[in-house]
Image (cartoon, rainbow, N blue to C red; front, side, top):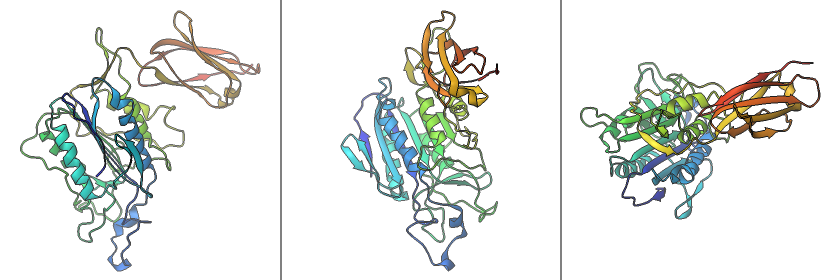
Length: 389
């Protein structure tokens, strides 16, 4: 088992369970291979992955760092299971710890520990995160594939997690606010027919009639679609989730800046399209909030809006190398910050609210230009069209 944090907290706390699966024993390139006559065709559809261990690590570091240090909702516990090419170590409360791989027996045991901690207080927040391979057969359940998926010849997906039933099983938990972030494909392997069963396992099956929960279930991609990530880098979805968890929305009159169960989904969808996170060569993904039943419960509060990330670019792009940027408050004109010419778009952070961005050109080839902007959470992007002299 790998418990990186387990604090005895007698008030509401955040309890997290993080799974990252990049190593698969029975898939292509895995350490376990059967004779060809015994192989399932399914294994040809899945390869080893490099992004999930890095993505899960990024989530853990944020939870153990600033995200878990919020005074209104401290991190009470963190269960972590990561399957990678080489054993991984993370720094927890007891120092550097080798992380246990994400095989079914360990996932089930860690889930039960996490469930019990979440169940200790109605105002606890339960956070579940998974990054790795996933499949969905037709409109059936979404299966999350663990390291030992494919171990059984006769129950190939028996070591996969049935996300849908597991989410419904959490309705029995006392924690009113529940967050599920799932970064996994939802395509159907060519070896499976539309009517083929997915014998995945619910970590906890539903008991009795459904109960009302303030629940966000956010999947990185739509049904039948694939999820993407760059090699050995945190996925776009994970980066967007981490930013959305620390970026409140505009408050109503007299209220505070808050991150709620309802702000996260729209912020993640916006951030996955933001040029500051999504590179031009990264495929688009449409986040799916199906199974959510959000009520707008507050997670984190802020006395003021944190700085808003921005991304300023020029059209044509070759004007960037001669662009001097200026960002100033509006209407006062007070300088916020400047940037000298560079080959890349200007990325930075500025105060929420009205501002003005100016682009001046040092080589005299282009005409100076400016525009009014409103820096609003979770991010802002502007492309200034410039003309040649």
